[in-house]
Length: 402
Ligand SMILES: Cc1cc2nc3c(=O)[nH]c(=O)nc-3n(C[C@H](O)[C@H](O)[C@H](O)COP(=O)(O)OP(=O)(O)OC[C@H]3O[C@@H](n4cnc5c(N)ncnc54)[C@H](O)[C@@H]3O)c2cc1C
Image (tube, protein in one colour):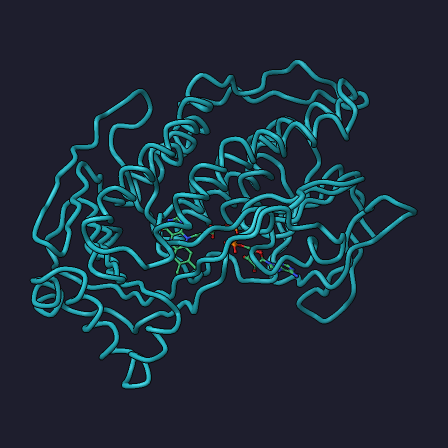
């Protein structure tokens, strides 16, 4: 049995970021994941402005760039009725361009930074249950790689364990806002596409996108309703992929066919979004565990990076004794919900896949407008400095900015 201030379950964008920020502030953190260190996950990886801003504010953007992640300086919107709009990515403080690092890279950089800051990182540890003490959560039980049960106790347990969160299930975290729309996705990597920006294409009831990423590769994805995807995939995934590319925008199948495929197609069947109660006595949720929306607006990672900071600030306030836990965590949830609601609704509209290509432009503009609030929230937010104390140890010694 080991004692920590905070036990974080899930070591990807939400969990590793939360652990990183807490550990930099002097908090004793355990970061646990059942997966392998440096592994990939089912997700494309386009970051939006607020996500890049977070990596810059935490001093990690230079590492992302140093690993060969290409700069994305424009976004092209392609509509099936023939209209094309190109939007240049305006550089802003901390955000010279957008980036789309592969998940095995981004998640690893966050985990490494958390470990460097002092978090105890335990991969290949599957959490099997939450430890309850009276009404409080007091940690987790996990199975180590040898199959032994280990208990990790913490003043607070954070569920950053994704869409099927065990922490959410075990604490009975209630969904207070449930989405209806869900999109199915197929994606693959190709070499030699020659795309220098994001390209998002919208056809009748189908969408596609190109995301330039590491190693000269582009991620090519297609999306549609789960029923249509199932029908198309009954004739094979390659057939479905080609067909949806063509229905999103004429010319895309030829461009993609001229590039060299690298690896297999990856699929996502589609799950409706949710906003959940994200805290209780001794526990909190962050990332998809508490807030999931359809991937079509490419925003889950950006939101996870935002909410990791909102949560770690709340935990620093409550662990330091300055603010009662329930007040700090209720404020975390209120802010998360306030800055998420508009994008959640806009994502629902796109993920319904019931728009014609003329409506798509209007929906896309609504998605862009919905992203403004979070950038505003983050750009002037101070990184916590040494202003809180946890027992005799200093808490809140962030301010790490390159
Ligand atoms: C097809 C698809 C495409 C997407 N494209 C984009 C995109 O372009 N841009 C974008 O911003 N977002 C995108 N997203 C959304 C993005 O992937 C998620 O929002 C993001 O991964 C959430 O991160 P997370 O850290 O909350 O959870 P996850 O990435 O799901 O990580 C959860 C971690 O918890 C671990 N875990 C779970 N249960 C346990 C347990 N019992 N014990 C120990 N560990 C456990 C898992 O092993 C995992 O490593 C996409 C999603 C999908 C499905």
